[in-house]
Image (tube, rainbow, N blue to C red):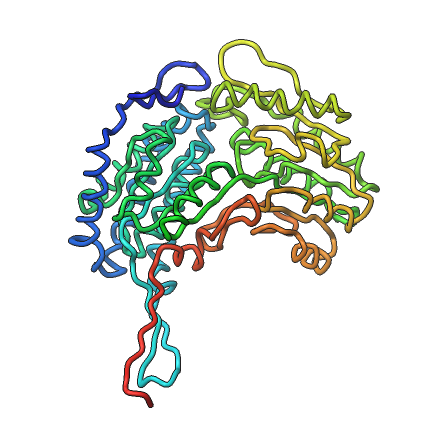
Length: 464
């Protein structure tokens, strides 16, 4: 149910039982959270050294890695992530903390630039209180993708975590508390969507990071823009995986594309959703995909052997059935799945659709579940045209035996990220983000840490 007018309540999508319930913050409590964040920023964090900040981030990473299941299980219980994937996510979140602890000083070092001044340089200074609006599908990783660079920049952080994962939010804050953070450096605010605007507009809030839908991004971006505040938007995706006829190892390409599609039961922005296959290998590749998808079984996310757990919420299951049904009615070939699963738990079958055309629902809308849409392309140019025929521009992949051809195609794919002969993934070392309706700004890498800093030019006289 997410939230009511008074509480957030998380529902286990496998058992359909309540996991955790927490009262929402009052307007007065929200004001206090923001003011306490500002006090901590000014009095305890802004003037710390990179090494002092790094010490905290390393301690947080150690706390999570030393107590893996304490932090992994809430994901499994609140949104159905298989336990092994949940452990991997906690480990990856710890990696983000460790990466920025090690590299933030280099990423944000003062740059000396020659000019007419006796001395001139650019320094990167913190902004103050920042706000992270976070989703349910990767509760730890996406939180740390915001928290680690923002904290290492010298900012304080307020999370507004998703209403469906309140226990995950509590556990993230607890990890920082156990690591010895200054009080109120990282806080979580429990509010509904209607209260977000007032926080963004609060004079002490200096920047906003959102991971969510394109609709949410448009709303948040408009509010932040009207306040002249920096904003980073990581939004939806309909990533294309282009498989060319000259691909040397189709079996490996099928392995990776299937993995990309089923991770987190397909509930990933950067999953391979549209599989565009060149005509000479089209039917063969569909057979390879079908063979692999058939081996994926649904089950209890706490079971170590489960590959695909439940979908996070019942209404999401219904939405996917509508997308598949409309696409089949429009002429898509149902190769696998598509049937409704009765009984307890919010499950959606692994579904493979072939002969999909660009105008069909599963091609032009984001499919947030284990649905693979296969589209035939006449040649590489046609495949590229299909790949770009979308409102989204988050990620994509190219599979080819000619790396130079792959690089050329990559330069023409209108996305923020392209992988050649590999899976599209987020990595703390590399910038991530989208174009078009997939987002604005960048996260991660040396680029992401500069989203919430004051890039200040300093000119020292006299003139030379």
